[in-house]
Length: 214
Length: 225
Image (cartoon, rainbow over the protein chains, first blue to last red):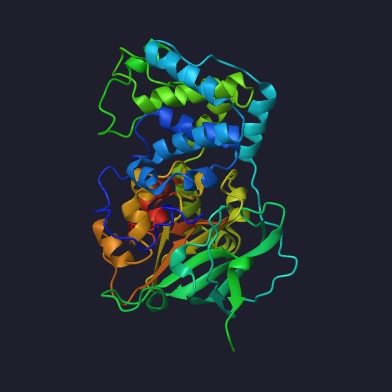
């Protein structure tokens, strides 16, 4: 998706609120909205990225999780939109109501398993690139699938720093391809700057990369 | 969740870092009357939970388990233990910088978003800073729920373009002679910054050292030395 979530390099969002640096969220429902997205739908990134840009940029973080979980749950047919509307009406009308408590040992065990297990990338079977090699991030776009290739690195030359291992290519979940950490020099990304040059490292899937012209 | 629990929560949530968790560790919805009206989005979250539960897609006890682990079993106290161990045990530090995932497992730390951990060390020559421009990727087992500023558009947009200006907003001045390395963790790898220790750590044990380690220092927006 080429959505509003791809924020690297944007300006205009104002100062970073650095007071209350340890504050993680405001209200309990926020973490439950995130949990519903992940437990109910699996990964939610693709649905968050599908929020229209105006909605994405005007919604707080956990509201985006909620909106995306609603969108994904209905569009994937996990729930019926009419059922969701019925529950919304019920809770709006009865301020003392709560979601019915349900217990499901298998689901709970699945969540505990997911949360306490490490999914380590397997070693790359056949990496095309080696550390130290110069690569260029392809210029491309994909309006449909979730991907992890921010606009600000496309078309820019960088250096393979590490080959991490094979990862399911986002948006094409059955294909495994190596993920690399690629190092970029800030002038190549941004041109002249008031700041001294710095190094930018980002993890990119092999299919986003091509060998630099000799 | 009962009224009794919510009554303890009757304060301004914008000002404090306490949350709506009850005392056995589960986060639940606010109870009307105890504090405030439920917001539109809280009501909608409840409706979604009810609809997914009714459809057999997510049980409330599974949601409870997710939140309990994310909010309470994970957290920056684990990251701080890792940092304190690295400061006091050079062999551990070597293993940590070589294979972060395996090294934190030695301390019993791991879980979702912790399977591919890379630890990057701040030194007199290099200052590391971690961001996720595309979403909010973060090493959950080591640091827990990301702070609000980490998830903000302001941080996500500028950390990769003007990192020194961003650091200055946190009161963290980086000399021109120090290299800045920015890590955009938008894919599968999760990063922890190993901050440089305070100037004099002699005579302190590991627990005392861990207490000196801040969440911000492990993301790279603060220094301890």
